[in-house]
Each structure stands twice: as C-alpha cells, then as structure tokens.
Image 1 (tube, chains in turn orange, yellow):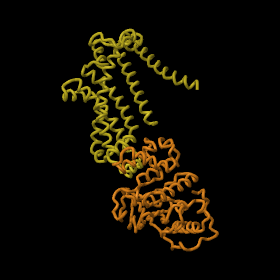
Image 2: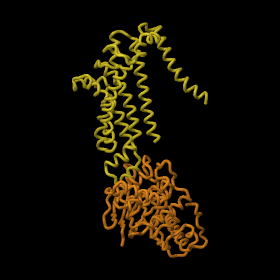
Image 3: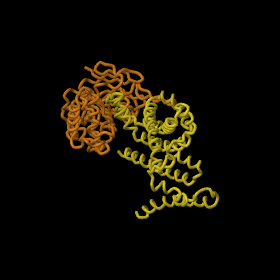
Image 4: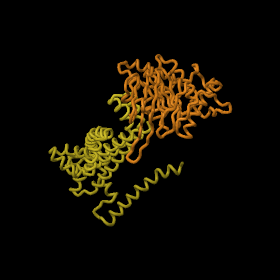
Length: 284
Length: 256
C-alpha cells in the first residue's frame, strides 16, 4: 500500500534572466513504514525533490499525496532534519525541542511537553547538554538535537535532507547507528524519505535505494531493494556480500548517469565484479 | 601592551586638547566675543559644581537642566520606537507593505526637526506635546529601517523552521522573527536615541521649555556666551554617554 506518492513532478526555477529545469517526470511511491533513500550527485536537485515531497516547495507540475491526501504546504504529521541543523541559536537544545513539541501537541500541559522533549534528547545521548545553546555544541551534537526535534513530534513521515553530510566520518557513523536505532524503536512505523550522497549510509539505513540522474532535468532511476536483515551495523555491512553487491549496482547506476546523463539499462541483478574495490569508508 | 594602553588613553586626550587649543586660539584672536575655555569655566562653575540646585525658574544647575531634557527625550524616544518597531517588522515581513510605505518613509525621513516643530504646534497647540511629537517622528526612522533590514535578512532556514514546526503567527513573531532581528532592532534604537537627543535642543529652543536647549537659547538672548558653551559641552557629553550605553546593550545582544 503506497503511502507517499509522487506523480510526474516537474520543477523549474525561473528568474527574470535564467531558467533552470531541475526536475522532470519524477515518479516515486513509498510504502508506509518504508525507509527510502534517494542517492545522487550534489547539485542534481535532491534537496528540491525533498522540499517538494514534504510540501515546503511547490512543484511546477505533478501531484504529491501522502496517506491519500494531496500535499499542500508542509505535511502536518511530518518531521524534517536539514543538513545544516536549522536550530534556533537563541534557544537551548531543550527549548528548541520543546518548541517543536508544543507546536505539534498544543493541548499538552507544559510538564508533559518538557518530559517528551527530555526523553528524546536522552535518546540521542544529549541528556547532559540539554541546556546548552547550539553555539556551545559540536556539529554532531547539533545534529542530534535536530534529530531529537524531528522524532519528538512523533511523525508518521520523516524527511532527512543529507542529515549527516556536514559531519566528520566517525561522528557520522555513530549518528547513523543512532538514527537506525530510533527508527527501530519508534512506537509506530515511521516512513522515512532520506536524501544522501553516501551509498554506504543508504545501504545501512534503507529498505530501498533510488538513484537520481544528474541535472538538469533530473529524474529517478530504478529502485534497488536492500533486503538485508536488521539491525544492521556498518562494520557487518563491510563484509556482507549482498551489501557489496548492492553497493556496486548503485555506484554503477550513478556513474552511468555521470557519463551520458541518461538512464542506463538496469543491471541490478548482475553480480558485483570482484575487481571493483570499494571506496575507503573514510570517504563517508 | 603598555604602549597599547598609552595610545588608547593618551590619543583621545590629545584630540580633546587640540579642540581646546583651537577654541582658545579663536577666542584670543579672531572673535573677542567668544569666551576662552578658562573664562567659560569661571562663569559657569556654579552650574557645574552644584548641578542640581534650583535657584529660580531660569537659573538652575546644569544637571537639573539635563535631567529635564533627558526626561523629554526619553518620552519622545519611547513613543518613537513604540511606533517604529511594529512598523519596521510589518514592512520587513510584507512586500506589499514595503512597496507601499518605502517611498513615503524616504520622503519623510530627510525632513528637519525645525520643519516638524511648527506642524506639531499647529496640531497640538501646546509646546510640550509638540516637542514630543517632533522627537518621536524624527527619531523613529533609523529604527524603522533597521528593523526592516533585520527582518528581511533573516536566513531562509529560520523561516523554514517556523514552517516545518507549524508555528502560529504569534509564535513565529516572538520565537523566530524578533529574536533573529533583535541585534538590528537595537542598532536602530541606538541611532534613534542619538537623533532624539539631537532634536531636543532644536525643539526646546523653539518652544522655550525648560531644559538644556531652552537654557542655551535663553542665555544667548541674555548675552551670556559662556553658558552657551557650557550647554554645548553638556549636550555633547550626555549624547556620548547615551550612545555608549546603548552600544553596550547592543554588544551584549550580539554576543548572546
């Protein structure tokens, strides 16, 4: 049963002098509780696609529905995590999360809001830093606050816009693991729509990976399922043959886009070439 | 470090000394009417040494006179920013309002306090409200423009946060807009206060109300030139102190 549906999305950014045709003919369906990652080059229009799917950016053509409802404006039961954290610098970590909780559950008394915010901050291991301002926190901690803020509103859909893109490799691996845990622990299934340029991250977290062609007029390639058992860990995936195979088919699709800009023939089932060396994990 | 301290203290003193020398030279050569620094001090020390003494309606200590003026400036300034802050927020948020009001503001802004004052007298018929009106209307523009600029320069991310968290309009205003624009708003307040203090002298001179500007005009009419210089120095020092005070508040807000 498809939960999120994108139909023939087109997006053109127009200024009086220029016109950038970013997206063309984008179709995607995401099932309820599914974790889908869109993987593509920087500048291909991934963030625009996420903005359109969440209702933040109106498309020039096409239709978006979530749970059967047409999306106009930001979808009410969604949370979002931006690459640059987007925390309000004049509030503490706790106040930032509380603000979101209060706006999502206006009927709740203050003590319950505080309890909810505290609980989610503790889930991302920020119990000791709740009263610090974003400027006093490291990049990884800021992104933890942003993740706690997104989960604390108990969303049905979570939009993640390169959530770990600005972090160093080690922090990135830790946070990926925490996000993985949060998704597994959620009280009701969360449908996740993630944008990333990191294939390993996508394999660790997703049920399905959808590569995106290079812009302009970017569109989505065929989806590649990730039928690996959960919970997953980055170190296990390094040596898992299926993970390696998925990795290489994603990379092959993406590099195919890079060369001719068109959709290549789908080879998802072809075995990974033994000679293909994986890029160093530190690239993450 | 030592030379740094020395230059920080000595150079400003040198500048002031230079002005004093010019003043003395002018009084000694070109203009015999102009009292020398020393004579100015001799003639006005009673006002300075007993600043809060009231010897009569037209003969009061300089501290008392400055206090009257400060109260009047405070009233006019508060009235001005009370009007200017919401106006600045409004034209910062709304493009139609910006288009509508920007030309009007640009036309009203360069009008001198000397021109507003007669209008104030016509409107209110009394000198006190006319003075407040003049101070308020002349001092509000920097706050309007800075508040507007502050709101318009709020990063797109913060607007997205308001949208994503589905904040109500009131929450968006109090939790996002005002905190984000606050440093700019206070820059506006500092500039506005400077203008309010500039305007006070003109408005007191024309309306003849008690205060530092009124005293200046009264002493000019009674040909006590030393007191004019005393008033000028007081105006300068008080203005400087006000600016430093607002600057300190502003710096705290920026670092917070």
